[in-house]
Image (tube, rainbow, N blue to C red):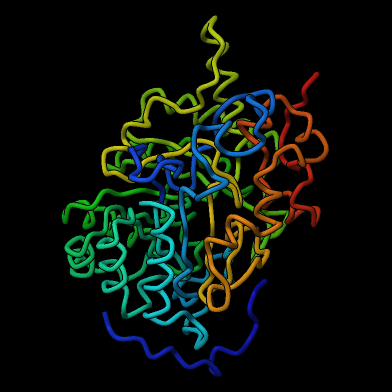
Length: 417
């Protein structure tokens, strides 16, 4: 929900001064996830082999026990005014934000899951004066650290040098068009596109690996050819292509059609064969079906692998990739005030870290447990042979129908036709 309170009535918390995607690598504790942040949908078609309806049977990672990735909305403060903003961000910080001490305690507890990927998101995480201190704390714990700042002047090269020094691995920024006109109109601040290109260049100069996040929506479908061309010039290791979920400031009319989704999926698969970076479709696990269908069309073998050839690029920095991550299933989101949700785009409060244990919430919350049991899916998602490797976007199902177990509303696939 968008917070409509008057920012003038807010007082920033008194913190001491001070987004990503993730490599599949061994974990120090058995049963804990490895691989990619946010997770790439994948695994086996035809439901849940081995009789287990949850994460381990789908991807070899025990998402019932631990997430692959945790994203913390550090603040809702931001100097952009993006048309799709999940958080309905505003310029000033909320006095109810987690304090520095609470944020460190959160990371301490999350580390009990294993060396999972931890991403500082927002709003704009660079609005917090303690961001360097917090990144350093997480890195010292052994979490795999990513950050997704806004494309503004707050992202200075000097700050990136400090973040690299304390242990940041990857920096991700948003580019939502192939040129300033398209991107800046969407982010509603002139110069945001140029800041994005500058931030990528300076982050690479200081030794950080970089990622671009792009929102696919009805308004930029026709820009995809130019966008893919631009991406090949940026020196990133990862392109995360997010398919719009109509919540926050985004509306259902902003979402591209299921047929347009499908066309972009095929375009991404074609690009994956030659791109000098890894590609992931977020809030669109249907992409895993397209990858498997395309691979099967190119081979006589039974194909169950959904990762594309660029996966090694996202493994280079230790962040990585995982199959089958979905809302609440290998993924956990913590709001700026400590609310725990299946994802930022599935805003169902399942507890708050100020009065509950995040490990217990993730493992035992009824909502999280239902989201990890794909035998509960309804409609065509419940009977689909790709249920185990896809499952549909639970966030988009909820946004469109009010039921997070409903069929994915933007999928063209039908089992028998």
